Image: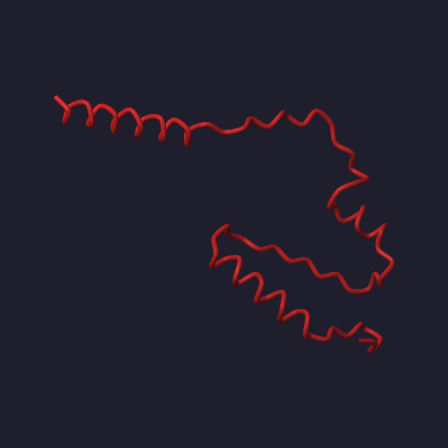
Length: 90
C-alpha cells in the first residue's frame, strides 16, 4: 500500500514537473514597423559618425556554448586586426 502511494506521488510530481516545462510566453504580433529605425543598413549608415568607406557585416549562427565561444573568438581576433581604408588610413 505504501509502495503504491509512493509510486502515485512520484507520478504526480513527474507530471507536474513536465507540465511546468510545457508553458511558454506568447509574444504579441507586430502591428507596425518604422523603416527609419532599428538595425537596418540605412538607419545605421545615417547614424554613423565614422567613415562610410568601410562596411563590415558579421552574422553568427548557433545558440550553443560552442557557437558562442567561436563567435567570441572571431570578435577578439577582429579587434586586434587593423583595417585599411582605400586611401591607406588605418
